[in-house]
Image (tube, rainbow, N blue to C red):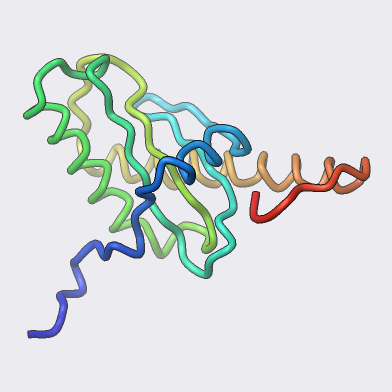
Length: 137
């Protein structure tokens, strides 16, 4: 059976601790009502998603997983609107959130664009000042 077009492939996921550390260390953030987005270039031709929804958001694992599912689906459906070649980390911003899919999807696209523009400006500033940025940043 061929894979469904609605699937979320493993290649589209940020899983390694090093990739998360690189995003947090070198990436740029943008904060919204539902989530905080951390964006960094990944050196690939596709955009990947990482999720960070801790116990600060919900103590209940069931509720945390619900937030993760909504974030993942918002990312999947808005992927055509996102720039390629990024690692996007979605972080739950506020405690006890109950996000709605349309609101998260709209906010996600705007926040990724904002963080990506900041990241490109920072890289351009570093290149102009002569600082070398090793590898994909």
